[in-house]
Image 1 (cartoon, rainbow, N blue to C red):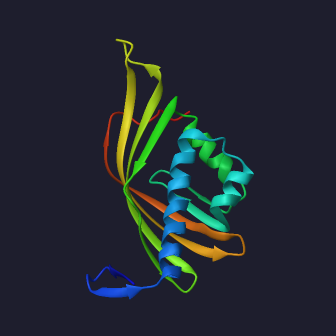
Image 2 (cartoon, one colour):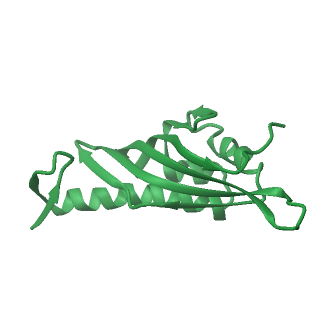
Length: 160
């Protein structure tokens, strides 16, 4: 028997299926963030993470639908020489085959050009992530991710 606190801080019992679903949804967010830094983003990447109608919204742009999702991310990441995304554990609430999630994220982006002293120039952000996921025939998939900028340090990339 496991007890958890809901958003209103009251204790309630949750069963193994809900614990497993929460873990699966949290793992989706983890896989998404790690993959941004370490993997080739292609249609298989998108299909393993997102529903066909998924929406990803950043403060400066958004993309709707799985078609083109990998290219959208790859184009955004190409503005930097490297990135590192570090997140807090996700808070996940599951209900009837859907889930809501939230987490905090720190992202470090390394600019292509080095500073005059040879050190890399960094653009670092603190972001609040909110999202949702749905249980599909292929398992849990992200249906929405929204990123809200809380703070930033350094300069964002110049627009091409």
